[in-house]
Each structure stands twice: as structure tokens, then as C-alpha cells.
Image: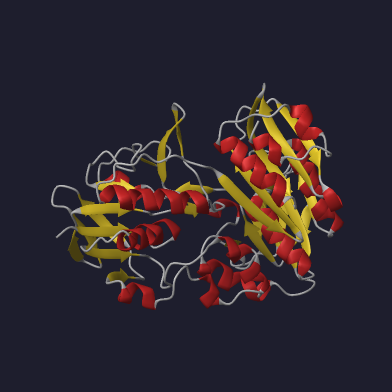
Length: 402
């Protein structure tokens, strides 16, 4: 009987094992995770969980009993040390575990500040796992001074929580503007105003020279010569796919663990899904850091292990919650040359990314209707006339039938 081993107990790994059982897979399943917690949601960590609005058990993707009830051997608090593709084994805690099919859902890890500039001082945090947030949460006291390094979504979400709790928040971003790597100027402008209206100090085109302090961080020196007193620091400067295990096993790496359309790696009995995996996309290769991708890709891998031979078709979508704003993103905006603005009701707005006459993506702020229609238009390959999108009197739904 086929044995499946899944390395990585996050969203993608949990999706693989649940889909296998849902589809009637009767073989042995083992899932191995480094953290002590059963698989949990990561997005609420920097929002509702950090705010204290979500209890730990609500983070869990499924109750702990699910795994025993479905005969899934869950090995937690253990890191896989190596893979032997020839012997079809993985080594964990000094023991070998056999597999017929292996799935790598090792995820990613945050970039950290180098020790040479104070990145190893106490009080310097990243936001990735449950332990990270549990460690920093006691620092979120009213009036505390926090420095956030990085103006991407993780940094902005942490800034929103800190501001809501009454902290003194300064955010520094090396680029010309926040969200420069991922969004249009219009979206950057929207969120800059949102944060400054809530008292966050945003310093763009400003780098961090070094953090200072004796053991614990107490200050920061910025590239413009400014010095700040700080009580703690949150670093949000991107993530790196966790490919070391795959690389050591001789698998091909290309902006992550390289997979084909079906989720197979360069070894036909090893698969990969989630943040760590790159896959073919429109003549190129793509790696998506999103919940939707982890779920969908993980489920496709499970089906293909069972012989479905179904190619993975990515449908990129993302979201971010900041204060009372829900940002929903559909599509990928790479290569856009035009932004179309659509004003909605009660201050909602959406920005639509076009390349020539082709709709690529949209950012919708508190406008779920625009998001849902835009997402379906993009998935169906439809590109409405931009003048129709810009007209707030134009009902969007009929555009789906055009």
C-alpha cells in the first residue's frame, strides 16, 4: 500500500493530507512539522491574533483530533534532517521514515537583519510563526516605541495593530514608496494616508544603518542621520523559500523547488506545493506566496499522487486587513502600463491594472463587489473597456457576459 510522507505542516501540507483522505486514499500518511502546534492559519497572526481578537484554537486549520480520526501520523516539533531519494527515506530525529511518494511543503522563512547591524539584539522580531507573535505580543503596550523595518504588507499590518493599541509607531522603507514592489503608486498613496491618519510615522527612501543597545535594542540609526529611541523592532523585509532540504537531496531549484505542471519535482516520486514551490506559468516560472495557492496547489498534488494527472492552473488572489480597510487583490500586475481608478460607495475604491487593453489585476479597498467581478473577469480572460470600469455608474456584473 502506498505510503505518503509530507514534510511541512503548514497550509499546503494540511491541504495535501486532507485532500488525500477526502479522495479516498487508504495508504499510510505521515506529516512532519518543525513547530509544536498542529497546522494553523498564518494570516491572522499579524492581525486578529496579535490584537488578541482570536484565540489559539481558532487559528487551527482543523482540530487536533482530525489527524488521529483520519489515520494521519502527525510528527511535530521535529525537523527532517535529510532525504535519500534513492532509498526513498527521510531522516527525522535520527530515525528513517520510508515513503513511496514524498511531498515537500516546507514553506518559507523571513529575511532577518544581519547581526553586524544589530539584528541579533533582544527585542528584534520577525512575523512568521506562532512563536514569533507570542514572543512579541507582550511588548504591545500603550505608549511603547516600535520601529517597523519594511513597508510591505507584513510591515503595514503590524503597524496597523500597533497603532490601534496605542503604540508610537515609526515605519522605514528603503524604496521610494511603501508597497513599491507589489502595488501601483495609487495603492501606495491610499495606504500611506490611511496609516498617517492613524498616527504612524512613515519614512520612505530611508534605510536602517544599524540598531543599537546593550543586549536589548534601544535605538536605531537611519540612513538620513536620524536617531530613534525604540523599545522593540519588527522586521518585515520579505521571505525566502525553504529549499535547503530539497537542494541537499539533489532536486532542481529555480526560484524555489522546481516543479512541473502537476507538482512533480525533478524526482518523479517527490512533489512540492506552497510558498517553497515554483511552477510553469504563462511561459515563465512563478512562485506564489499566498494562502489560496497553498490550498489549491496542495490539493492538486494530492489528486495527482492518486493518478489524476491534473495540471495546476494558478488563480492568484491575496488580501490584507489594515484598520477598517480590507484590501482584496486579484491577478498579477507585472508589466502593467496603466491604472484605471473606480470610485465606489462610502469611500471604497479599486485600482485596475491594464497592459494595453488587457486587464491584469486589481486592488479593491473595501469594495468586495468590484473584487469579485474583477477576479472572474481576469480568470475568464476578459478585459472590459477601461472607460466602463472608470464609470461609477456602470454596473460591473453585465461585463462578465460581454
